[in-house]
Length: 370
Image (spheres, one colour):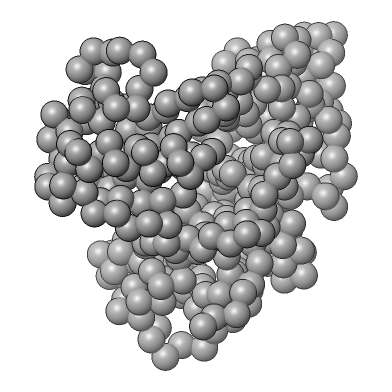
């Protein structure tokens, strides 16, 4: 990955010209302006260009193709070549022969020192196990603006710190009005961030036989104390590398753990289909079949066996999408032991040992800070 920067403001003509340089097929101006990821392929050579305002990230299968594209760009724009991508939108990128690592150590260290807890004690636990927070806490209110600012910063940190996704999602539910109990949970998370600044998300090079899309889906039934809605968690790996993750409260109230799990599987299946199509668009290959690992056998049977569907008519028809995907052989839904359910870290607060174990399985490891 390499990075170049346009020293002039991004204009409509910029994106139109860029599209003409990298796109495979002609398109209208409106389509070009809406697109922020461009693709060009020539035989076995693939070039991808990501655009954010006046910054471009170039990814290619050939160094020669990247260099040639940069020469093309410099003929049209006044460009600054930043060479290998090292820092982008607060994310630090380290590229080595064995793989790539992403982290936000500088962002976390500088930002949170200015916000709060410059001299706080660090800790290695993200949140107390089995913690329960509600909107009707009988406690004093805190400065809402400060609370919003810290939570907003934590949400951006989730881009590279998958392990904090559930906790950040939980405290995000109490934006109005936050109390001292909610702020205490946020401060505990900041102490964890301070103690884990050296953790990075690692991506190793894959062999051709390892390119396999695998997802994990899990939920914590009726975990929200205010409305008893469940929390869904999902993670997807391409080979051994973690590529997407999400932790979110379900939009409907499930009547059983099987229903809650079934809804989580349907949501994860939508993400899996999108990822499969995205990889196909980027590589030019056919959409790949993906695997979805679930630890609830009842939900798996509900996805596979139509006999059980008469008992589940109360489930919104929107979630039967997963049954269609299974019937069309787009996804294989398989059982995984609870002990190996990686997505568990995105649905609830865990004990320290289990939390650390799942964090490592996701490829988030500690490196020595310079």
